[in-house]
Length: 148
Image (cartoon, rainbow, N blue to C red; front, side, top):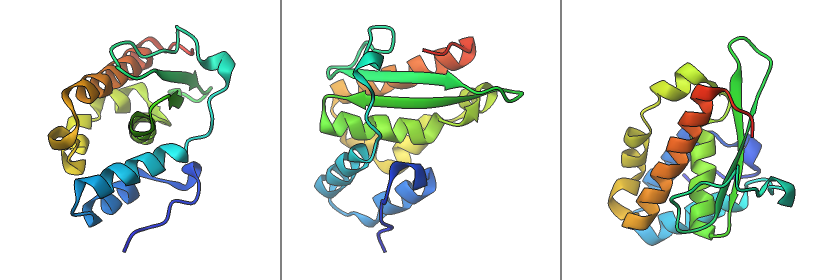
């Protein structure tokens, strides 16, 4: 049974993976991905800077990072896109990486997660490049400990 998406803060990655597995048709998965993007809290215009922009994406994508004061610190992410499907991918990437330490981020096998969701098979080549650019930027920011 499809688990409802109430608000973004209540979502978790396993719930999203379980929901993806319920759909037989990739069009339904795209719709679900877009719905996931609609749950993202809005990113303020002031955060839509070149520093936060993910280069390599066909659509416009911004990722804002913040590190907390814990030891080791955890990185928290916010993001947005001007494309509905890509905004869903941003939401997915946030669910994968946000709230984790740099070591956990570095050790995350996002390709395995993307394969479980079928993204490796159904995303267009340009969206795959954009998704890889998002992950690359997040992992680089995590290694540097840079808040944007």
